[in-house]
Length: 312
Image 1 (cartoon, rainbow, N blue to C red):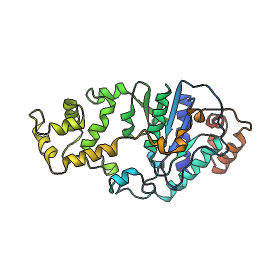
Image 2: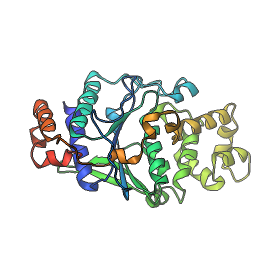
Image 3: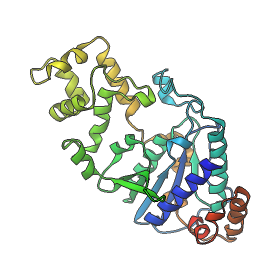
Image 4: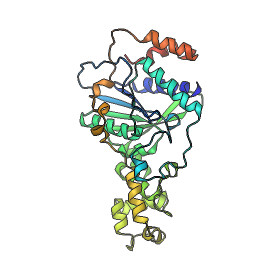
């Protein structure tokens, strides 16, 4: 229950902070089947809105080895050292999905597609519709999507208990990465790799050196093309000219880059953004949500919190 309760508290804090007009919780695939929207969810006719808040499920609630994706086909060792999620996490995901369904909160799980790519696809859809986006996740890979209308909020915890959120923008990315643009994040990560996901990168290239190289040559291709150039620091030439360095770097780039086109093969993601909007329902879900909260023993979420969690 702890996993579900902590997530519900974080979601409630985020909903109160952003007052979203659209909302979607995205899960990594764990069951091998897809989830689209809560049972009985109907599509209302509403005009386009001006802001979308796309809420991503934190990694501690996401699947690991259970859900394979195209990245495993590209690189068999992708997330190879990840262990199966403990039973309490798997149970926590199921409890969380039931709670979200009771609250009417749209939540999506697409078999064979990682949550990161689903979120990138929903973000691209919103951008095409002129809608702004907030992605709530501690995963820095989402920083590649940052723009004037796409922000990332990473979760933390305040000293006195309530969950706090740190906002990342294109401007803060430039400030912390020596003037680089968010889209260059993938070019840096292709060089450094990502041990969390077992993405190799180029052995011997760390974050500082990768930043310097991308600052100088703009893209991964530019760095590789100038591997023996006099402007390349001596300590970088050997790693960049090592056997398989080019192959490792280009593969790592493909692994790190989020796909924003998975809706072309996934019908559930071709729905209009309106399905993620708050909409009046013929029968309120409040009693259903209260019943689930009471069953879970989440007494602190009953009262004003219940109404804030309801997505109707």
